[in-house]
Image (cartoon, rainbow, N blue to C red; front, side, top):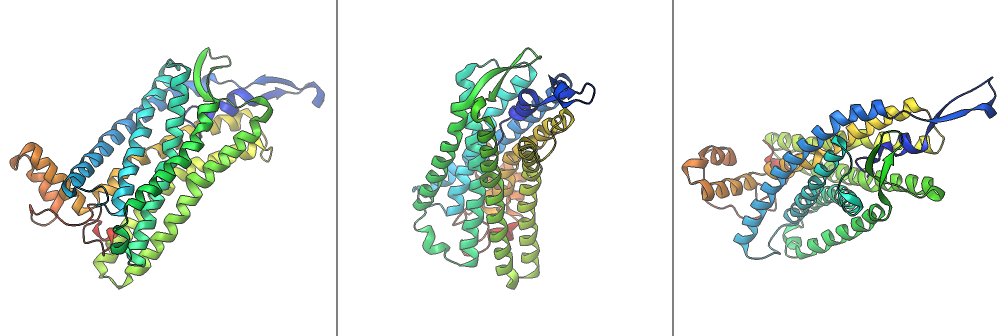
Length: 378
């Protein structure tokens, strides 16, 4: 994924506007594009967006981790989770680590990068690592639900849920390898004419275009197209398999399936479309201009903020929609605040009436592991 501040890479460092004297191309006078107006605009938007996403993601994902920890302690075995629960755990960790990097970049937009080269490389690598991990874990969750519902193999598969840990480890390793690009090329550089130091990916001049286009292509395929195709295929097959369910169950399933896909597409499609435009401009398929670069700079950062907001929405979409998850949360609240202090949450968790009996099976689904996770959408 494109790093938070690198939307100025093309605009500030490699693209130039020009004037033409006497219509002779040889008389072109090149000058850097003016960054001041764009930076002032983004300087007001970016810190607010990053801090809001940071707070929401921090609260939501810590809540998910606390409920997961309580659930795991009650089962006394790391392999007692369903596959979905395991992926949900790693998704929450990934989203939380991603959120932790945002205050650093918010400070950068308010002032400049003041944390040094080492923290620049670490923050950039952690950011890229967890953007990739987050979307791949979403694809894993949809694939697990596809296996459980369409092929009805969840009971035999859950006896091998430690294999899910191996799958998660493989994802972390692959994404860690991709994040090493940030460790290698991240640097603290001065923005021309702005007297500001920023943390950016600064590829060497001799292979700048190859690295930029290559990483943008990897970001587009691995960070958007592949997860989207997996989600679309799995969720369409799931909904088709549920056609024999009651009308109410189908309506709830359809609502959740549509919500999951739409939120993912709305969060990441605009950003990736602008990144594709940026790549086409770099390849001279689209005519370069300072005006287009201004649009790309502003658009990429705004749509990137929208994509980052997805890590704050994941706890709602993949955790709190499950009735058993809500019941586990109500039990945790009851243990902390007492029965009287958590009556409202208990009623919300149970829907109709209340119960103190701990549900069996995965907390990421309302029914037993043989039923649809998607039928719990209120």
